[in-house]
Length: 115
Image 1: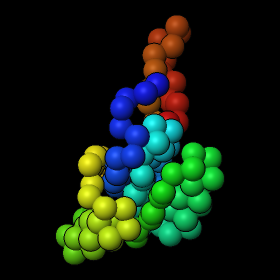
Image 2: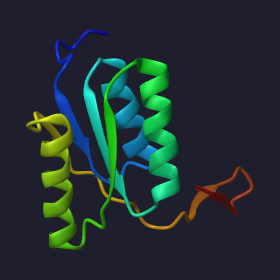
Image 3: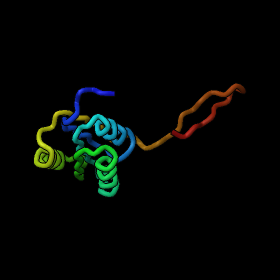
Image 4: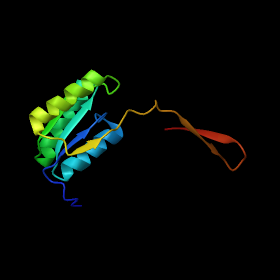
């Protein structure tokens, strides 16, 4: 797909795994410069190295707890310094812990399924 955003800078919060990581990969595939942030350095470092290698794009990471305004400010400043202005912002956040869905069964009972 070509969305016409090649070369744009995208900042995706809470992007070390899950939906945020998938969004970062999608922007990288479109040729965007990608900034990712989360609370875990190891996963961010692995992700940015992978994005650079697979897609040949500029990628940076920042430690950021999006519940802390000072960390958000530091992240935005770091992205501006490293990649320039932010063209695309995805305000992702970590979801609740995994839980269970209940499904009815043919025999009238319910079945729990972990999600």
